[in-house]
Each structure stands twice: as C-alpha cells, then as structure tokens.
Image (tube, rainbow, N blue to C red; front, side):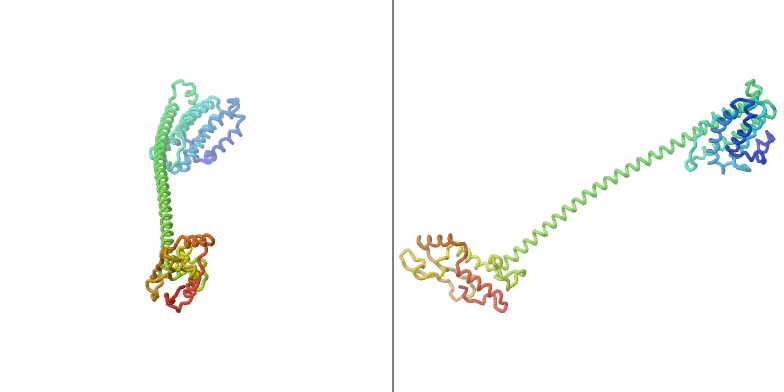
Length: 378
C-alpha cells in the first residue's frame, strides 16, 4: 500500500485501528485539549470544526463504496486512522498543528462539492471517480504525515516553495472532487429527465383515463335512455294489447279473462257486447224511449197521419241479436219533447235496458249455456 510505503505507518495496527470513527477522534481531542491549547487557544474547537465536515463526507461516500475498495479493512476506518495519525503528530509542534489545520481546511473546501447520490442511480463513471476520491484523501493524509516526520510540513505552510508535495496532492484531490461534482450533476439531470418523462406519460395516461371515464358515462346515459324507451314501449304495447283484448271481448260478447263470470259488474261498458252498448247509448240519448220503455198503446209514437206503429225486426226469428235491425218511423214533435224531457229528468238507462243487461249477466255467469242461447233479450 502506498501510504504504508511513504509513511512507514501501518493503519491496521492496534493503536491506529482503535480510532476508526469520528467519535473516537473527538474523544481523543477532548482528552488532549490542554495540549492542543498550548499550540492554539482555540485549538480543540477549531480542530473539531475542520474534521467534522470531512468526516461527514467520508462517511457518506464510504457507506456506498465499501465493497468497491480492496483494503484489509473498510476504507472509512483507514481514512479516520490516517486523520488520527496526523492529529497525533501535530500535537507536539505548534507549527505542524497550524499546517495540519490548513490542510484539513483545504480538504474540506474540495469535498464541499461532493453530494450524495443513491447507489441504485449511480453510473459507473461516478462510482469510479468516487473510489479515486477516497483514495486521494488517504494519499493527502499520507503526504502530510510524511512531511511531519521529516519536519517539512511547516515549509508548505510558509509557502517557501521548498515542498510542493502537499499542494500537488491537494490539487489532485480538488480535481477529483470537481469531476465527482460534474458527474453527479449529469446523473441528477438524467434522473430528473427520466422523472419528467414519467410524469408526462402519467399525465397522458390520466388524460386518456379521464376521456375513457367520460365516454363510459356517456355510454351509460345512452344505455339508460334506451332502457327507458324500451320500458315505455313495452308499457305502451302492454296497454295497447290490453285495450285490443278488451275490444275483442266486447265485440264477441265474452268478458275478459280478468273478470269473473259471477262477479258484479257495475259498469256494463267494460265487457258487455257492442250491440248492447249501442242500445243502452241510444236509450240514454232518448232515441229508443218510445220503443223500449214499455209504454201503453196510447203513449206509443205515432205517424204524422195519426196511425200507431210498432217496431219491426228484419228477422224476427234470428237468434243472433247483434244482427237485428230496428225499424221505426220519425216521431212527431210531442213525442220527441216527451223523450227529451224524460232524458233530462234521469241519466239512468230505461228499466227495460237494465233488465236486458241483468239477463245478459245471468247468462254470462252460467258457463253451461252457449254464447247466444237466449232467443229473447227484451
């Protein structure tokens, strides 16, 4: 290992290996703060302030690249052990202590640009430069330790130009830190670009989903309207079918299926035959009052010459009463006035018509009779 060759120090020795973290180094500074104050009044506090940011960056990098560096022990422990060696050597000489503080300050300045990035998003170029950066930190600390042992570190501090090893090592560290920063920026830009692409694709998918939902709602509304139209059409069809069945039963003389034969029907227009409805209507309007009311001979309508008449059937012996034709002559004004007066007095059908309706109901309640078994309705 280069560090061991140049410094003659073994970082894996028990003494150096015991200072493998920030806590152990700060504990050492606290234990020897009286010695550091001899070199500088605020020596312990200044030293802690210089080492703390460096330690944070090292811990961040080592947490990601411990498997990438081949060392007898993790790279973080090696770097903290090298820092401890520098601090221990500068404790006795005040000039070396000031030079070590300046070196730590320069290292912190270069590592300030190093940013953390997750290992899963880390490109190979960034992984490589990060490993080189950790190695260069160890190299810088090794050069400082080497100059401390030869008492030449103060020459670098005084900038006399007699030692450029520390400056060269720090320049290399700064260059690697800059490269790391550029690669991190590029990787971050790449991640941001992919994220924007994902967001745009997500917005497009959301817009398409919103459009699909609107089309689905429109289709549901159309289906609902069609279902309502079908329901209305079916209701109208059912009502029309019911009216048609009722008309058929009214014309044929049989009651509908939903009306019992032995039930009492108050409204004859629901199921009584068409011919009986016409008779009732004519009787109610007064056209057949003179023929159906069962008046005496003296009250029958007469012709204009004063002769009485009787209504005649076209076929007296025909059993089908619906085919009957009533023949009567025009009545005089007195008879018409009497019929109109009687029609105004009562809105009920004549008694003879109600008797005919009663006989019709009785016949319909007897299933053993044929539809037109009765010969005489009145």
